[in-house]
Image (tube, rainbow, N blue to C red; front, side, top):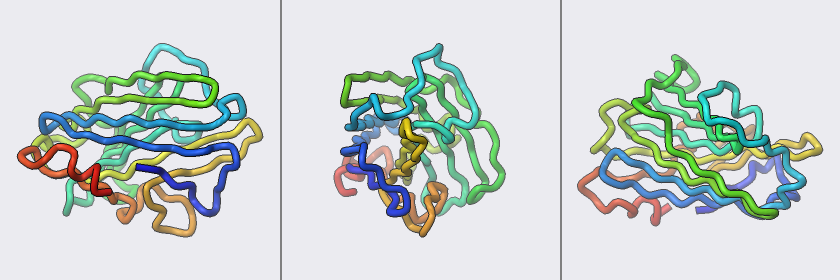
Length: 190
């Protein structure tokens, strides 16, 4: 699936951002992000020891928002090319934010070439969304890209508002089926 730049924040440097999504074993979510661009023109932090850090969304990062259909609550996970990550839960749209309780940090692996940045991440859905293991989930996939010039572009599967808003419920457009249904059907149908 391709992410689209918000019309208010285009980027001439980014060629494409794609994401592949699979759900395995009910509670395991695998995301593979691929950014195609001249990486020398982007602000990409140096690798550090992976750790939980706030405010990653203010810098280049890949994001996933996860909800259970019919519930106003959702989770947000951010992944920086530095190796740092963040995880939050919300009780409603931009309300009730708190750090998500995770059994273990998400497993993330980064790979970088001159023109491609890849992230492969494995998320245990029972961490950010307690009890979601066998249930259908809805995802909003997004990215924030900061160029060396300071220009910021916001990327998502869908942009439902005039200004970038990854928390908007209409942005949660990818539905992955319950554990007892085909594991990749939702990702292929998007």
